[in-house]
Length: 543
Image (cartoon, rainbow, N blue to C red; front, side, top):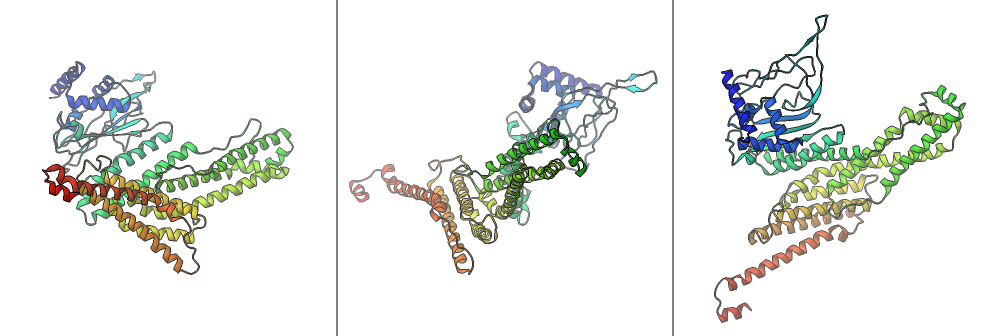
């Protein structure tokens, strides 16, 4: 039996080398090559070396594996006599994917086995190569090379590229005609720069998972309160993706205070600080280092205090991410300013009564103020994030119930916030909310940008336009109600920002929608004239 399987694998390999490959395999090889950045023939070399053709075949068969996790990364090309087996649940209806053992860094050659739906397969490669010393102990040279293999993401640490192949419907046969629909690919990258992995996961969440959960049917639809469950899941995914986006920005933009110069040693206590005072060269080096830190901190403060440059269509999510980035940047800077290296240098300046110390204290005060402002603003912007999720996840009819709750939160921020209750900050927030509503209306009318008003039935476009007009009316009504409540409450400051500035863009958009509706009325009015024969009296009556 084993000899037959081996002959079949060798025959498949010979056919693939000749270019006579199953189109389904060819499609997988091409995608893997594009994801990993290597040539197609190199992908095939790795597949044949790992003996994975049979596993790919099972992945394409109905009722077998529903996913395969590929890794392309540098691994120890070592020898492993141990066999790691992962048994499937015999009662499971959908067998798990083939998860090979992690490439070992131990002293022996890998021997991998794959668990199938009913039984464990025999190992396809179990070789050892040892060199015996005079003492009789085995030694082995461990080298590292790039490998493409199938592994378990729970046990294989990602250091390169991970490509996940999943089946749309594991019970359906994969053919040459439907392989591009039935087999999905997702890619995650890692590297020496941590931002690579963060960016990869963030894009996977925001561009794949959030849209997929939003539009595709799932088990959530059959649960009680399924709408709420789906909304909570989508809100959590969006918040996590937003945090990853902020983390990526912070990793790229963070400011690290300069390290010690040559001749300037780190001061760890009062005794060492007093000793530095007797060494003029050390003292000057420490003073230069502190001046360098002051310049770095001042550049951050100048950048943060400049007028914000934003796009005209920025939404409330941009406002939240701005304050989260600002808080993280100042928090990281403040933590460095409290490090032992900085405290030691400041102790020397304090004992020497240096004039630089006054400038440093001013910088420290400004950083502390900006950090407190960012922390307070993030707290209140987080409060409004819950009611901003529907602006990104729902159509205009689904947004309407959240508008009043949104303005109640704005009123709360206006009343109790220390820094965010100014008219310029609140008006900027409301403008971003308006921008997102307009964007959502545009996407709603155009069917996610796939259609125009002329390619859809006019009756459907009319209904969508009415929903958008109703959203604007609800938005203005909620604002007026909130404004009247504030004016009726003694001791509360009323809203003091321009309504035209906040709502003018939405009003202009609704004016365009009304013009489209009027155009549709004219088309309907004269459509009978163009479609059928018109008598003179009918023509005169139309005029």
